Length: 435
Ligand code: HSE
Image (cartoon, rainbow, N blue to C red; front, side):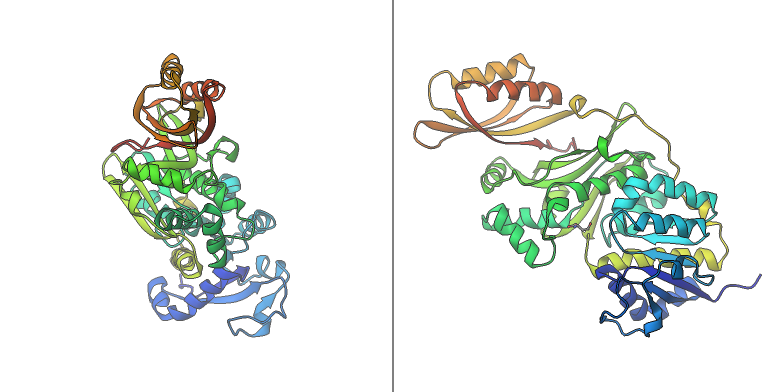
């Protein structure tokens, strides 16, 4: 059978990543042609306003504001979705798959919430959906998990998957600036949106932890089952105490399995300064995991931006194009998924950092210690410093304890007459353990 010599793309969206994809296809087109065994051309681009001036000079007839011009185009082989948001992106991907076209996307929101049904649809239509760019931008994460590490049982992973929050925490820690000032700088640099909720409250990382969980544990956990704590409650004082105790604070995406049950969560942690992820600063992302055969593995790089994300998207385009050219039934390469029980957060075992203010009078420590003791919470490290007139600031780290026990103890402690304020509570990763 004759080989197809040209693969035609339809792009849905031409924002930052779309522009990066088109530029990269131009810049390295010759190289890609050799690697894919065919030319890869952009046939049509869906944009909101076709008359809007663009950075990339393309003939006007390449642009359309009608999605049917791409989804129903008989000569478009692959649809590259770069619109972001759930609808109408999800609906366009669904229609493209039903039309038998391969879909490439970096849309974590859609994959985390509808990935399972889209993968099923792709299989039914003997095509596939690729989404390497949805987690970790340009860092190869999903294909290594799916292919290179396929021989391993991955029981846990820990990642810094949101560049904006890592940038904010780095600036706070290194320069002693407030969360608000660091956020403003992140917004000025284009890392954070004008409404930063998605990044700072953990949503972006939660979508990504769902996808990582899907690839690592073979199950897509729904967003309602993802525990989320963002970074708004972290102050420079917490970062200073953390350092004094031998830690840094990072927002992490964590996945692990405990007796067959899956736990996926996003929250800040105190990370020992010697942990490989502690050295990941600014907008960089990294994923640290353990496979039973390979041992510890870490992936590191830029998790966002036009070219890093385009690198992942175009990598997917080349794999999809290769599959088309060599007539490989790409539906056979998809991810095998099955439902698994979720471990409720209250049953997790964690170590905690707590910073509070107490009245400086006899019996305060005794009351704290006995309340913790009643709930089987054992203390590992304690610091007390003189605070405002008549008060003391107490910082402590607990040993590992069932979450429900810790929260019940804290509830009681918050109500003690000796305690004037609970400032912050974060989980702690102890020594070499990820949990
Ligand atoms: N806003 C994300 C980040 C990039 O800061 O990492 C897109 O997922």
